[in-house]
Structure formats: structure tokens, C-alpha cells
Amino acid sequence: MKRSLAARILLAAGLVLLASAVVTLLLGDARLLLGKVVLGLAAVAAGAALSGREGIGRALAGRGTHYAAVTLLSGILLAGALGAALWISHRRPLALDVTRQRIHTLSPDTLRTLDALPGDVEVLAFFRPDDAGFAPAQDLLRRYAERNRRFRYEMVDPYRSPDRVRRHQVSESGTRVVVAPGPAEARLREVTEESLTNALVRVSHPERRRVYFTQGHGEGSPGDAGRAGWSLAARALDRENVELVPISLLSTGEVPADAAALLVVGPRKPFLDPEVAALRSYASRGGHLGIFVEPESDAGLDPLLGALGVEAGNDMIVDPNPLSRLAGATPVMPVLRATTAHPVSEPLAEVGVVFPTARSLVALRGTPARAVPLALTSEGAWAENDVRSIFSGAARLDEGEKVGPVPLALAVRWPVAGDPPRELRAVVAGDSEFFSNGYLHLLGNQDLFLSMVSWLAERDDRLTIRPRSREASRISLTEGQVGTLKFLAIDVVPVALLLAGIAVWLTRRER
Image (cartoon, rainbow, N blue to C red; front, side, top):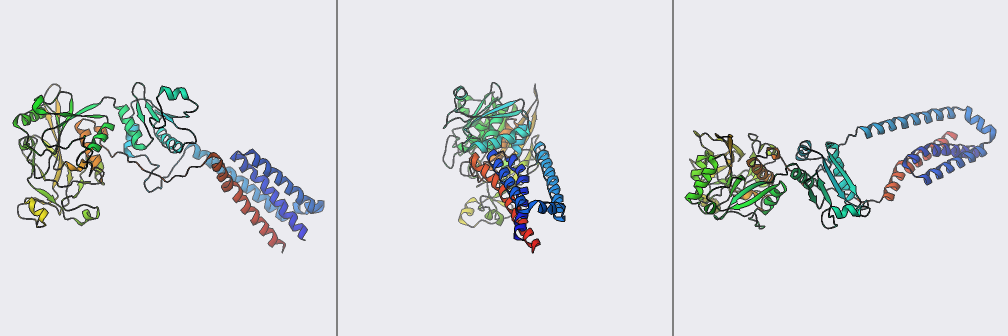
């Protein structure tokens, strides 16, 4: 009886090993395939020798053989169905990103940039196959290529292509990626969604817009890397292919004709009458102005703001909203709601922005300019006229003070007659610190500032939320380790479980 049971187990094990050899063949390891086939044939031969001719005949005529044949046929059909599903998934892949930071999903800005590519773009990524950055770079580039066929990429092994390394001046610590749509070229040190999308923006808009910023009145500086400077915002504008140029209106007397926009960032000292006249003349010609004023400072720009249909209050916003406290803000640093009334702020409606120590704004009536709010306080906020009481802790809402929602940023449009006709564009904000180095990273501050400048520079396609650097937890495996894991998970473990199950079933059946 024991001999018969052993024979059956050996026969079943041999058949399972032979049948599972198909899986091993798909994995592509010839040595493992040969070993499994030899082992399966040996098990079948041993089982046949133990059973004898009569035992084999009874086994073939028994119900067990019939059930085994049906099971084998079902397995073959199941394998065929799985193979067909695998082929369909390869031809029409469907991916679901369930990561917390959605690291495998391209941002809306990236999708919009890819869809708007004016021509073919070729990306050369110089990585060795065993480089830790090879797999992440290839995965990201593949997702870009799947979105738009005009985007093509090639993974170049620098050891096998030294001529291309010299031609593109690639180095281990310098340029690793070259984005080249013909004559224009962008060079990157790393492959991230943020850097790659910015490179596509630069090559898609090769013309570099010049944006001037005023000096001489205590304004913040784009060259200041301290907390109060806005060097990080300037660097982000450079990635958007915007060139920042300083200007002294007292020296020039007017805004240059090549100015895509002019920024006035947090002046602490008043502009002189000739400077204000130069600004008003620029606005009357259909110029584009970005004016960012601070509380407790008189920049002498009230006549200019009045001409734009805006009035800046001599006050400071106080917002006791407890939700702001949860976000880490203070009563004088409120979390604002971006409105959906303008393309600049619409993408940030569900994100919010933070304005530290801001003053209120009012859109004046009876002017041809059309002012639209970009950011509003909560309903519980108010504009405190007695600024000193805020810092002494005695601030209270008094009669005559503006109550929320109070606009802290406005976008102004004004058609200007001429040949050709132009449109005055202006952005006025009651704060300039929201895009300083100390606050740029908060909520949607960076995107709001970049979209403001893009709108002023007539880059309406850049009014969006930019991609952020998102990190994933990765493990680097060699090709041999990946093959071993596949063999264990797809071949060894399922076959071992199946053999154990058959052995237990045959043993119990024998009893």
C-alpha cells in the first residue's frame, strides 16, 4: 500500500514539474528549465517503476486520472486566459497610482506642457544600467513618452558611447540629461519631474521674457539669499525662461520698450514724482505692472494705484480663524482663499496661500479698469486701523473697519487703444513677503507668484500648479537578484505548495 502511495505521489510530482516547466521557460532561465524537466522525468520514471505495468493501467483507467486530466486541462485553459490578459495589458496598459504622494502620476502642469509641445523633443539620458538613478529616470521618461509621441528619449550608456559624452559635454558631476528639440537645448544634472518639465517649458518657449524690477526704495532683492530676499522666486522665474533685470527709473526716465512686465516689490521709501510719472506713462501705453506693497510703509504710489482702480488701506489684516492656527499661521499671517474668478488664482482654489503682515485692498468703482480679487481672507478677519494695537495684543474689531472676506490681491485689466491695440495688465498685492525665501514654500505661495508674473508677461499657458519634487522609497536590485525573486515568487513557491497539496490529498485518500 505504501509503495502504491509513493508511486502516485512521484507520478503527480513529475507531471506537475513538467507542466510548470512552461512557467520556467517564460522566465528565460535555460539552466533551471533543464533541471526541472530532468527532475520531472525522473519522478515520472520512478513512479512508473514502483507502480509496474498493472499499476499504471489501473491508474490510467481510474477516476483519479480522469479528475487529474480535467484539472490539467483547466490549468492549461487558465494559463491561456492569463497569457491573453497579459498580452492585452501589454498592448493597452492600465496603471493605478496608490502612493501617498502620487509619485507615479504626472502633474497637470506636466500634462499641459506635453500636450502643447510645438515639435519633436529628444531627450538623451546618460546613465549606466547599474547606476542607482537609471531605473527612476527611465520610468519617468517612459511616462512622458507615453503621453505624447513627440517626446522621445534614449538611455545612453556613457561607457559605451564616449563620443556622445564628449559631444554633449556630459560628466558624472555635471550634465547628465540633454533635452534637444533641434537648435535649442536644455541641460539637466538630474531627472525629476520638476526639472524635466521646466526644461520642456524653456525649449518650448525659446524666447526669453525680460521682467524689470525697481531699485532704490528699500525693495526686496532677487539677489538676496537671506530670509527676506526672494532669490528662490528669482531662480524659479529663471527656470520659466524669465530674465529679471534691475532698473532705476530716475536714471532711465521711462520703462524700456522690451519690458514684458515691471515689478515693484515692497518699497519702504516713497517714489519721487518723476518715477511715478514714468510708471503711469508705462501703464497708459498698455504696460504690465506687478505692485506688491507692505503695511506701515508709504511708497508714494497711491496716485498710480488710484489710476489702476485700486486703493490700499493704511491698516493690517487680523484673522483669528482657528483653522489658520492649525496650519501654523498667526493672526497677522492668515491663510487666504484663492478665488476662482481669475485664471491666475483658479488652479489654487483648493490649495490656499499665506500672506504675512498684509494690508487690505479695495477695488474702486467708476474707473475703466476692471479689478478681480485673487485672494480673500476668511469672513472672521478684519483690517485693523490701529496697527500698534496688534502687536500689543489689544486689537479688536471696531466700527468702520473693513470685515472679511477682504481682498489682499487684485488683478486689473484695461484695454488701451492704439495700433495695435494693447491691454494693460496689473497685479496689486497687499504683501510682498509671501514670495520671499522665508515664505515661498508655504502652501501655494510659489505657484501664485509665478502665475502672477506669467500672466503679466502674457504667458497664459503657465497659469498652473507646478510639479513638486516627490520622493519614493526605492530599493536597488541587480538583474540577477530580480531574476531570483521572479523565479522564487512565480515558480518555486507555487509549485512547492501544489506538490504539498497533492501529497496530502493522496495520503488522505489512501487512508
